[in-house]
Image (cartoon, rainbow, N blue to C red):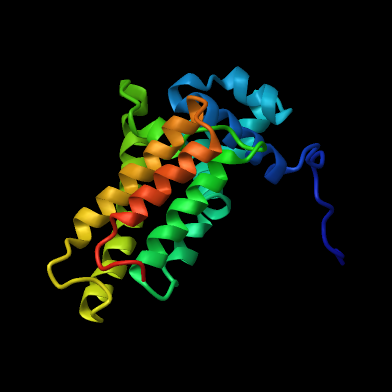
Length: 203
């Protein structure tokens, strides 16, 4: 009578989550096209066969890294949508975006922006993936502002789509300027000015 069978094969010699976090930093710093397999395997501390066996190809690895980025770096978006007023939503988004850019632990810039501008044939599916994920995030913010209009928190003539695009542009601008060396003081002033222009006063 068989009592079961032993698991064959050598155990993993690396932690997949740690390796994925390392891959994320490479993609974040260099973009999908700029990140070579050599860059990735060196940062992850694994061989190419191990990368393929554990994560699939480069595109699959990127999508996993993007999932991690959204889960750990962009979780503030979901939290911001829970704020009481539309202005508090906007402030939460902007200040959280700045906090991420001022971190000494992560690369500068926005991973979504970096990879949305990829233009090579190899990266077209990646660009489409990043744009679609960004569209879904924007849809959530638009819906929140539409609710604010219905509740009287925003003026009835407010453009929820326009406000979302405005915030997105400011957040992307924060990432670009932080990457160019702008000071935290200057970027905070940018946020304060942006919030001062928010429709409906200082709610």
